[in-house]
Image (cartoon, rainbow, N blue to C red; front, side):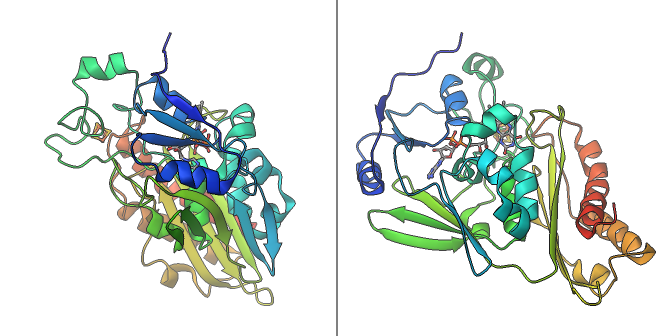
Length: 334
Ligand SMILES: Cc1cc2nc3c(=O)[nH]c(=O)nc-3n(C[C@H](O)[C@H](O)[C@H](O)COP(=O)(O)OP(=O)(O)OC[C@H]3O[C@@H](n4cnc5c(N)ncnc54)[C@H](O)[C@@H]3O)c2cc1C
Ligand code: SF4
């Protein structure tokens, strides 16, 4: 049996109370929302805090509201709520698909969007029990001095593994971070760092309180595709989110965005793709050819390493397959 380390638990009843607890720097503190990732990390001694601050009783973080096409989502909204929301289905379909693809229905009942956006990077040599990691000599991410993925590597290359981040990135989402020192709002892309050990810029005294998805253009479409070992419950071995903007009158693509995850510590936006697909009508062979070309361009920009299960070369070969599939589905052509 895996036992948790000893720690204090605080259950603040309001946001100011929670922020006050986080501002006390004497105790090494972790925030718990749904706990579906944190509790496993505690049991595996990946996290050994002195105190856990639970958000369970903090009100005001569980809204999904629309204002002029823009979506505001409280950090404590569960993935089950997001996945079932008609607003999300209508205004941000890729986000709904990504939320529904996380883990299992039971996990999604408690797992939150805030916890998903802030999920720590994952690695086959790190997300293991203490006993297992000790036998291997630990690694850079915790307690060790070397990397088992990149021989001689000095930087952790564990993989961004939250499913909703790539979808939110294609939608241009912003996040609100609050502390006793004030509020900062930043584009979601700026929340992330390409560092497997510290993959976000969130400070220990800050809470993520809200995500905002701006109003999308008329004719907006989106989709999320995911490669995983077990369809019913697993983390992504590769995740692909796409956004297609389509002129409602001519049905021609006016803009595109493709973001990949589970490759490196930060989700990756595929570059130089507009010229391949903008101006192409979404119905017909030209679109299929453009989607295939775009998939190949994405593949050329990806170099998976053996950080998560699954052969890296196989994951790379699946990049064009998933990109094409997501584009065709978004276009309604699949
Ligand atoms: C069996 C299983 C399968 C899983 N499969 C997937 C999967 O397929 N895809 C996937 O993306 N995830 C998966 N997960 C991981 C996890 O369930 C989700 O990522 C979930 O959304 C995490 O949310 P949570 O509220 O439970 O986060 P928690 O575990 O409570 O927290 C996660 C991290 O975020 C921090 N945090 C949470 N909320 C806030 C906040 N508001 N402000 C500041 N910090 C905060 C915590 O301190 C912690 O570091 C799986 C987990 C399990 C157990
Ligand atoms: S990428 Fe290397 S340093 Fe990072 S968790 Fe994996 S083995 Fe550890």
